[in-house]
Image (cartoon, rainbow, N blue to C red; front, side):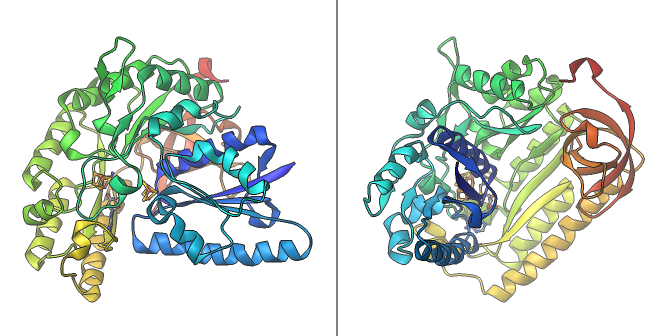
Amino acid sequence: MRKVFVKTYGCQMNVYDSARMTDLLAPLGYGTTDRAEDADMVILNTCHIREKAAEKVYSELGKLRRLKEARARSGGSLMIAVAGCVAQAEGREIVARQPAVDIVVGPQSYHRLPELIARIARGAGHALETDFPAEEKFDALPDEGMSAAPAAFLTVQEGCDKFCTFCVVPYTRGAEYSRPVTQLVQEAERVVRAGAREITLLGQNVNAYRGQGPDGEAWSLARLMEALSGIEGLARLRYTTSHPRDMSDDLIAAHRDLDKLMPYLHLPVQSGSDRVLEAMNRQHKADHYLRLVERIRAARADIALSSDFIVGFPGESDADFDATVALIRRVGYAQSFSFKYSARPGTPAAAARQIPDDVKDARLQALQGLLGAQQDAFNASCAGKVMAVLFEKPGRQAAQAVGRSPYLQPVHVDGAAGLIGRIADVRIEAVMSNSLKGAFVHQREKAHLN
Ligand code: SAH
Ligand code: SF4
Ligand code: F3S
């Protein structure tokens, strides 16, 4: 059997796409491996969001070229493919920079992989495919593999029409597209049958979801989740990533009404300064975000929030940065990601005058100190509580298993190795910086165990 190694960079949508590429190659006789040394084909599923992410790909390609040359010397071969957002953004330039690359395939055209592989096998040199709409891709993909992880991803929406001035996503993933409701319900039913207990609905702007319903009308994300809630055996729903502009009333109400929807929301604000938000083209003000948070908390008091922040966006003054700090103090986040602004070719903000790197560094450090302290405080508040944990994988120690709390915190439990794929009540006994340690209380949902 031939083997493929898919290495994934970037966001969860790439994780989903990587799984689908594996499904696509299975009928061609490819099993999977997680070592390039054992692989006949390596696919790098890449991310273009920041310069560092994109550069990593080229250093990895350098290593793969040496592996490919060694293979050729011993009479073997290695096929190298670049997929994902770097493939879309750079296309042919990738092959120019690293001629060992055989295939370049964009995020909306990877359903063409079998064809591209056949072309290479026929000795075609290089194969490049970077167009086609998302719609065609989803229709062309085969059903998922036979087994699913306890916590699975499901892409419901792709692309972005927002054009934040710092961001490459509208260029790499194309226009917003929502998959039809029936297709999604069927896919969700299949992954639940294959073992998933939790599904995270994915989209670059997932809360802008407007998919065609079985009644011919455009359904909102809230309506889609209500339909998915009816799937027996599915215990948990999540969705990410949301834009504050699209946080509609019915979605907020879903946090009150849908038992399976977990009390955790990633709602990136990027900055707390109205001036910067405007320059970023985020299309809302800080106050709008704060009022939104209040309404979400009114619907679901125990909800935990997370966000993304960018420091050092062109023109960001000390006062602008202070406004971000003030917003963070007002909201209180359970977890967050913060990044130094990275100028991306072709985006409007890249052409503006840039903030010096040492200023960015200092701001990032200050922000991460504050966000880290908020995360510690949130985790500490969980000590002594009983939480439902979905066990996902074995832990590092024997008989240990690691699962996730409703708030996405990793929870380690001794003696829980037999519980993978199940949900159990756990008392939180110790709090570490990025995870919790708990003890098993009693088994839930005995009737549902599969
Ligand atoms: N669709 C999501 C974001 C996807 S990108 C949203 O709208 O929130 C994930 C995060 O990367 C963004 O939230 C932003 O904080 C960060 N990011 C995007 N472009 C960036 C850039 N040029 N430099 C630094 N961080 C960036
Ligand atoms: Fe990028 Fe903005 Fe679209 Fe998010 S909403 S993907 S940050 S352009
Ligand atoms: Fe990166 Fe593309 Fe996702 S740029 S963050 S892999 S949409």
